[in-house]
Amino acid sequence: QQKEFDNVPAAFLFTTNCLMPVKPGYADRVFTTEVVSYPNVTHIGEDKDFTPVIEKALALGGYSKDKENTGINGGHYVMTGFGHGTVLGVADQVIDAVKNGDIRHFFLVGGCDGARPGRNYYTEFVKQTPKDTVILTLACGKYRFNDLDLGEIGGLPRIMDMGQCNDAYSAIQVAIALAKAFDCDVNELPLSMVLSWYEQKAVCILLTLLHLGIKNIYLGPTLPAFLSKNVLQYLIDEYHISKVSTPEEDLKQILS
Image 1: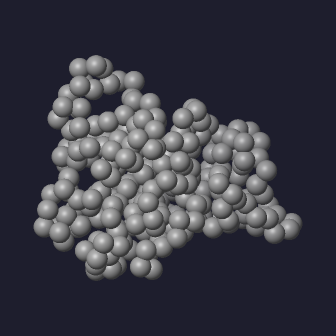
Image 2: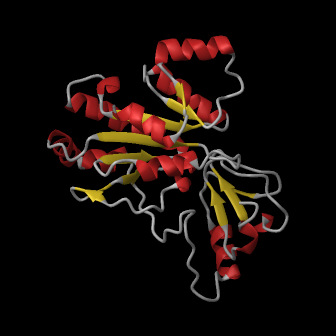
Image 3: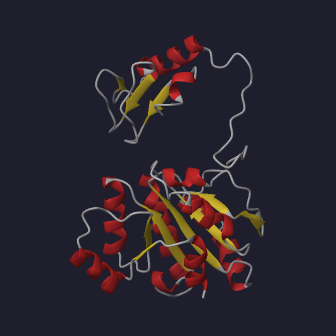
């Protein structure tokens, strides 16, 4: 945000709290609504009158020429919209693909992103996943790899973008639905969660997963600072949480 927004002739509307401190160079182009707000930034209230956003966008006019941006990996296209409603809408296809052996494993790879070195782990992990696996993803960690073209399995894209971190609910609902379909526990599914941690909201999501009894989570690239040795050992013993190592080693362990 702080590097790119200065050069984008457009208005920005924030609906969730992933808002970095706003710099003066683009503060007049930032708008907030719902639970997110920021000092001296125009907030769209309950009346949902987006006139200020629209007027600002029209005044700025956008780019004078068509401009094409790429993702981190040079990709030109991303596909989104795989909330639980969409995924469960093709549940029969997914279940058949698993039963037929076309889909061997699901990975939920996502979470918060950050600038610290080591977060390219998630890019390399996704690149190295076998062609008979599906990657579910959400939250800003997905931008490490969501522009990769990994192809399809039975007409379904191998990368399914489920939304923002607040959409972790969708991932949980999909896991529960699959467990019901296969008459098993969520922990018995061919599903592994490889999560990136960064801030408080991610902690809430992790605690939710633990409350639901989800085990064998891979967490990284660094562990939360509040995890004392005793707490960490408890999570390892009770929930089999692992710190990520290398994509090669973790994939080998997960798929063995």
